[in-house]
Amino acid sequence: MRKYLERFYSITIFSLVFMLIGAVFSLNVYAKPVEVSLWHYFEHEAEALEKVVADYNAMQDEIEVIPTFVSREELMNQYTIGAISGELPDIGMVDSPNMASFVALDVFADITEYVEEWDDLQYFYDGPLNSTMDVEGKIHGLPNNSNCLALLVNMDILEAAGFDEPPTTWDEFYEIAAATTDPSNSIYGFSMSAVGNEEGTFQFIPWLYSSGASVSSLVSEKAISSLELLTNLVKEGYMSREVINWGQADAYNAFVAGKAAMLESGTWQIATMDEDIDDAFDYQYTLLPKGEEYASVIGGENFGVTVAASDVEACTDFIKFMQTAENNANWCEIAGKLPVRSDAAELKDFWTEDERYAVFTDAMNYAVARGPHPEWPIISEAIYSAVQAALIGEKTPEQAMKDAAAIINPILAEIPVAGSN
Image: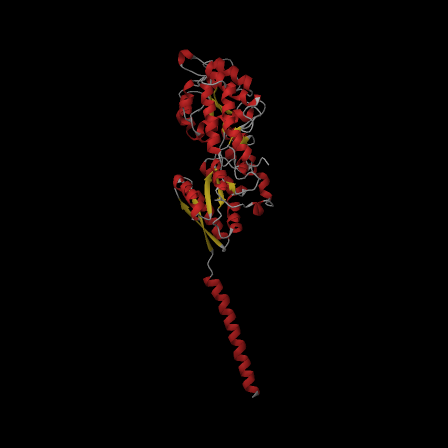
């Protein structure tokens, strides 16, 4: 009997050990990472994005991020449809001024609890980071890349008019615009886009904020003064009235053709600048001149974790990885865009040794987000309509701003600009 019991116990223990080993073996062999879908509309930059994803997937085995290209238009439509149907990716890309609208539609999840203790957050520029927030300051994503506006100057024209340096203040700017305007050669002192769409608002925002005003104070003397400045340029012939029909590319073409002494220019225009100018003249970038303070405005894209994500914390971990200083610097260097964090800009000579990028990098310290607000398209339309009305003399700058405020202020009374509470 004793031998029987000993044999029984031996077989039982052996079986349990065997089962335990088998279970562990099975876990190691068959456990698969959770698949996380990421939708984006990067084209030329897709390869760089895929490398970041591959690096993340290789460094851990809990989730596997799977990137998928979706055209920008289709992706925006999918967010709108998905807000109702729930058919959303786990992580999605979005143009920064549009994020507030999709947050309001409950497309992007609140990730504040997963990033508020993240030490890296202190290095993000205010403008891009604010574009991810709702009115209560809750964070719904992280900015990925940025661009902004600065002043581009034809130094040959300036020097011929007796100026050795670009303007730094509104007074200097106006004086140079007047002195460099040459009607006999169809040369204007300044060129910008004031077209009737988001581009027009994008180009006006820096002048508004430089006055010390904002979209919340359009009827203030400061706000009106910003529109008066631009209106007077047209009224005196220092800026073409055609700017109301010009997109940013049109204004750029006027500058590279030598028909404008100064241009409100974006980061993306550096890429073709030398080829387009072809040594016809010397040029220089500088900050947009300041009224009360320096100002610029941001463009660029954000990534957010959608409400459909089964593991918001894990998805947030990935977008934090995307936006480490090193990854942000590597990515933006390849894409020719500006980093969204100041310490990333310091990692590469790309943004410091090239004087042109150095100006834009500095401008990021003053660049604001458009809104952010879920009704931004309505707010933007009111702003560019006011600018156009003033520039063509249909309304005084004061009346144009009052009319814009009549549309915007009730909207802001109901839902203030994000982060203002």
